[in-house]
Image (tube, rainbow, N blue to C red; front, side, top):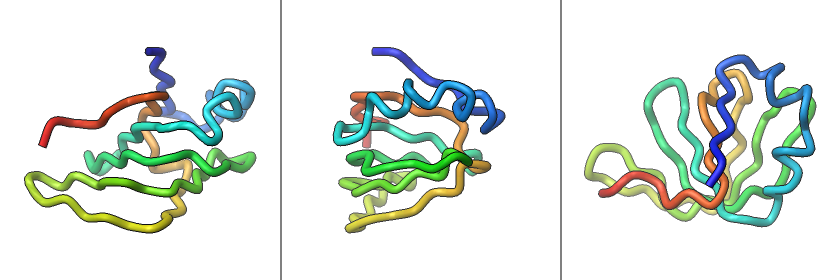
Length: 88
């Protein structure tokens, strides 16, 4: 499993084909706020804002289920294609 680090959004936007390969597949996203999101990547833009159909959003021991979420690329730290997310 390859990990794409996105501490600076331009790192990903310079190689969009890495993220493009993940569209339609499961992805684990780590945010700067230490929140983690697992879902299906639906799309992204030039600023690496992510549209994701979420399955689970772990917050400590609580799991929040959402239909879809739009994530600002400036707040994304890491993308893990095929990631299962943290253990709950």
